[in-house]
Image (cartoon, rainbow, N blue to C red; front, side, top):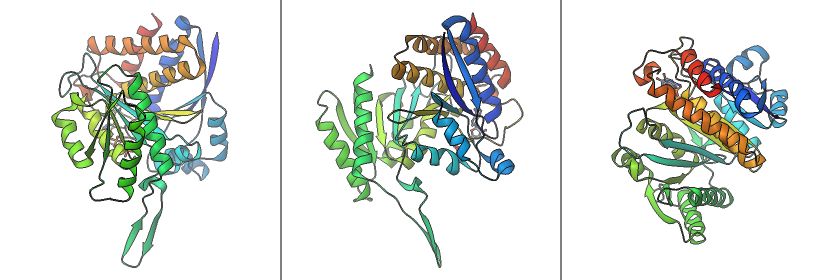
Length: 341
Ligand code: ATP
């Protein structure tokens, strides 16, 4: 029996509801896969700030560092103090956001299967905003090293994918000539080292349009931090919405897994949130554990969870965002039951 320690950030808003579903699913794996998870609830976010005066205490950072992986539900107003800080602190430079059509959920077009590889440590998210009389200046950082590193990640990912093996760099270098110019240049340099992978470029406004017009044509999209943040919400909508969209923050030796969606205060505490996004996020965590720990069991467990999710959606147990009437807990229960069968 292998045990993995998971630091769980329950988050705010719908965070505690959806993370409970993931915990249930992880526990259900025990019976079938000889896998157990030592799930350690780790305080962070708005509630933590209200109770302890800080959104991300040092003790929580230590608990995260001591775990095998971190599963994070969304936090509310303190997102910048929690996840943006953790990404920089732990150097989780690659934010991976896949959009793949699910069998039993209507999508914008057939055959959608692409992934956004978002640079995760710089751009406008360094938090460098300065007030001056009459306005504010926000500094945007783009470095050669971070751009090259994320481009390399995207090309390596494209090598492993079964689709068209194509990387598209998204930027706005016609206007942001120096910063996005450097990002584009780094992507071109990396593309030259991967002759087997097709490479093209697209301006971010055009990408926003084409994600709706021809989403089935995309394969791997590499982009800077803020464009990736915005485009990935749009991308989620092409395959059924934020309630289904998983993501991973990956570094050299550690990773944090979180759904794309936020704390959604408009639906919090009512059992309306779709837990599938965080359950599919949990699959990404299992796949990462499988790869980094060379543990086939985790890959098989991830596959079993994906199959269970498809089965549950096929059976019509869906939350309101997908046109169903099941609650968050009912969907979580149904997936966990199928996993343990
Ligand atoms: P953030 O900037 O923190 O990512 P956001 O502004 O993108 O947050 P969300 O909190 O993600 O906003 O919510 C956007 C909309 O999507 C809301 O109307 C919310 O109800 C809906 N939504 C988000 N997550 C889910 C979910 N898991 N299930 C159902 N609806 C959701």
